[in-house]
Length: 486
Image (cartoon, rainbow, N blue to C red; front, side, top):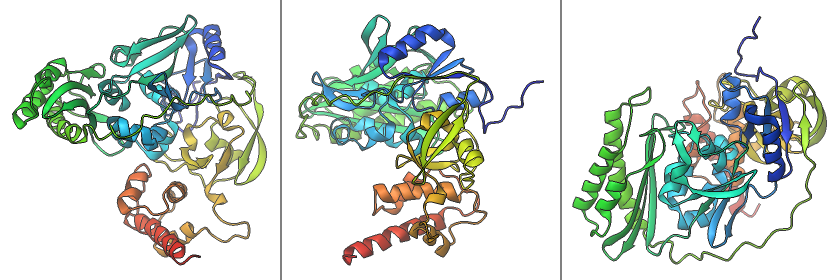
């Protein structure tokens, strides 16, 4: 009898492999063949495994490979390590100054929790036509660095996608970096996206990069997502801009040409006709934004090559068989503890079943409601999408850890009580853990900041107004105390 599908758990068994270097990862891919899958952030792979759309015999985690998460200048270019998270790119000041279209794309990306977990390599490696970072990176002239048994090779990102869910990656190859060239003088860029709700994938997205010389366009790259079998450019629209004075007529014409150049389909998210109209409007708006931004980054220092940091002590490669369990150590709510975990055990299950920390809730099970949010090394993550074995050695904070040892509640918890920011309470632990991370990162958020940061936390009772009010009151109290020197 087949086991019943349950989105809370990963039904199938698999070996878990944790290489300590890229070379070891390549070797493991060679040994395990096509039934091995690479794990970066896990926000796609774990969901696919839960829904039984993917059943790898081995999962190879890149989480312990030093340097794969670095964002640094290399050989005059900006190198984004494949494991650089969407959130890290969004907050990076160099990207904000020189590549604003990429910042725009990261801001629009899913939820804060998924941004924290998701990586640029994973977003591109899935081969999705709707990948948010892809149009921005293509418009900015990015190349992808691929490493395999034969060494490294680079490919223009626009040539990396070969079809829906398909890429130019060959057997035993992985993405190791995305390379962005230094922008030309007078460059400006922008990215826009239309989706059904804030945290959804795009119905359509558009990215533009212009080079401005006086009143003329001397460089133009336009790229789009969710409007073709792959992320794509619009060369005819680009040619319509080149050498022309920036004017309403030129912009309107380029937007029209782009809307005719794309290859949209009608599906559950939108119709082809709507996508064409959306692209026309987005190109018009994005061109104006990019033109206003053109040259603004010229005064920002590109800075020097990054000093080669001393390599941290490498942990040995770790391998856990599909039918094995391993004793792992975690630091949960400030206390060290040890649990036994199989490769397919989720952090959520271990917290609830082995450590009896039941404040963290089962919700959708696929990363869409955020009821299971905990903090991993201070950042909000979805415990339903984190393999327990991958959390070994990390610090975890659950809602039970917010209160002090004597039982006194955290000020944020008190604010939720004072402002009636809960009803049934099911979503409240995840909301609290997300809000706490926000207040640590930004002690004085605006209401828009609160709503944007917490957009992934679904509450079916309160309508969010009281939640936002509680978070804002806690922020204002901190500000008052700081102003008073307390």
